[in-house]
Length: 353
Image: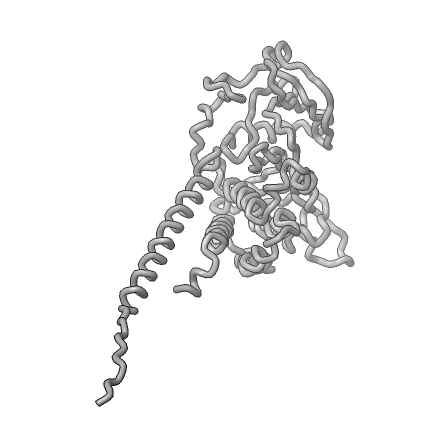
């Protein structure tokens, strides 16, 4: 009888191989999530971005550059004796700004130019002293008698020049959606700080158009944002029934919040006494427009805008009471950053699982 050929078939344990692959994949996901957590934790709490900055000196003191010890704010005598003006670098309605030098450090000297606005100038100084934190430009000294303020110098200047700075060859590598979203997070962090400041709820009134907003903030050399101009920060006190008005003139334009516009139509002439006051939610209305500027038109920025669509729509609600708080906006921005970094770090992971 003819024997049939006998083939031996090797059996592989598909379940074991599949389980091993799945285990390795899950381990990789856990490791990547741990690395992501460490990265984001470093982002939120390092480089002076923590809620309490260990680099800050006690009230009335400062430190500059690589100096480790804190020095007392410079007095009138010290400013007159030790600070040397180099050149005028800006002038506004209230003050003139000079690039200056103090002990081989570049500093900024601001001086009142319009005596009729001295109350605004002194209010700005009061705010600067009281709000010293990681969100606010560093105060180095002042002289009330001479209406002079000395602050830290930041060579990249105001946020007006952000796009020009990021398009410079040396910064090309950080002109990304990621860096730009972090700048937007910095900006909202400043608004959140002002709305819950040690003095109470403060409204950023120097914000009637985008250019004016950008002029109020500085860009640091490590690409963070500091508020620089605090001349117009009225206080909201709901328990005392105190709301605010940004100036005594009629405000116009799409940038300002609806409640900041004259509500009685063109046929009724504007009267400051008839203009209803408002609260800090005017700042929330403006966040989407400012963030849109930060995001720019780099690769990936439209994806970020898509993820921020719902929170930005909430910021633009006509009823101020229905808009989110600055803290809610900030939380959403951070969640979007975390999500997008995770997706960038692990593309296709969801499909593999």
